[in-house]
Image (cartoon, rainbow, N blue to C red; front, top):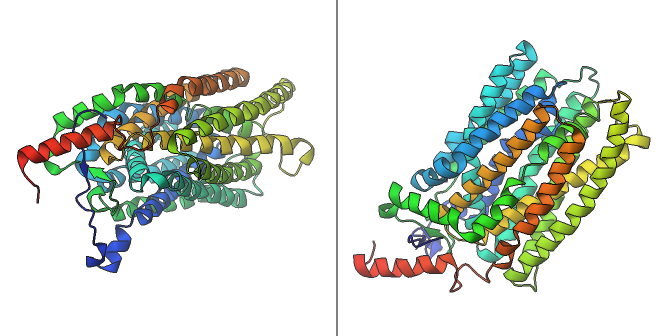
Amino acid sequence: MGNDPVYVSEGFSPNPGQRSLVYRVYTYPWFQILLISLICFCCPGMYNALTGIGGSGQVDGTVAANANVALLSAMAGTALFVVGPIFDRIGPRACLLIGGWTYPLYSGSLLCFNRTANGAFVIAAGAILGIGASFLWVAQGAIMTTYVPESQKGRAIAAFWIIFNLGGGIGSLASFGMNYHSTSGTVSDGTYIALLIIMAIGWLMGSLICPPKSVRVSTLQTTPEGKKNWLSIAKLTLKTTCDWRVLSMLPLFFCANVFYSYQQNTVNGMTFNIRSRSLNGALYWIAQMFGGLIMGFLLDIPGLNRQWRARVNWLFLFVTGMAIWGGGYAFQLWFDRRAAQGKKQDVDFTDNSISVGPMFLYIFYGMYDAFWQSFCYWLMGAQSNSPAVAAILVGAYKTFQSVGGAMAWRLDAMGKSPMLQFAVDWGLCMGSLVLALPAVLAVTLTNTDQETPDEVDLKHQQADTSADGPRP
């Protein structure tokens, strides 16, 4: 997004048959999409299983809320201006190895808290995880939005979202089984140990990720080694984030995680007992799988060009949002009446007379999260086919997502009323959709249209090639 040159991937070969079968499979775009999905299944997927239980499996969610504030604050401070530029220098594999180990560290801190009540360790581990998550998510976003052709980006997002959220679903179901007979209100040590092991496996899988220059996609654009200097990367970062289309998308990014604290700690954490919270966590992430599948179809819907798909999906997001949050308002009125009677964490999933409505609301909240984030990633993918630009966009996404999430978790940690948190979340989400309309309406037919940033970059590539001579 700007005048810095971006180049067609040097690793793409028109005759891939010259390579071995193993290498061709390894560099096949969809293999890499599946691989990054499995990594996220193991790392953030298992982390989601923890947070989806409510309070990270603890009776008092204050420590977990403060850990999330530390996590999101660290992520906000590193994703855009630190990790985004670093990505183009070191590549996705190194980013995943740098960031992946922080997930088992966080699970280990909760295991320690179960034994020692050392809240400071949990909060510190949350801050370290925030830095590590920046590396992981920037790499993931760049891979998911650029490693496949433009016509398949919706399907790539859907495939990722299904596999990734399967991690949260399975993790939560395992917690449900391990805590089925629990009366303590806190998950068992075994839950934290099992999740820690799975997270460690996901970290090691990061070593298998393929660098962008080797991926077999003709539209993939990578920066040559000679252009990977810090000044060029800094200029590209500034020009990308200051583009008016990106600026109009920032409120959308800000709201991408703003509702987690309310949904997980109030709707689930303060309403249901521990085993029902675990079951609800599984249903929440499974609903995200279906949400990703639905959005994958809508984002690649046949018969509509990319401009109309952007508009149709924006309208879908607005209408479903108003309907689901409207149902949430009815729940909040019911919750406040129960809270006034001193009732909390007492609803069991077997009590159909009062559990069905809140459980279905939580399921729809999970589905809407998948709608929202899938649309955000698709909008980012519609801006560029360059992993360097995509990394910057995902860095901006994760930065503002983290700022919004940290604000929301801080409201929860300060003990603000659930109704206030609900109203803030609903208002911000619907308002940000309206503010994002300019970016939605500006989506072009392809990233190589005359008025798109990629077309400008390709012109500079041609000028550079003429001046410097052919490259080997």
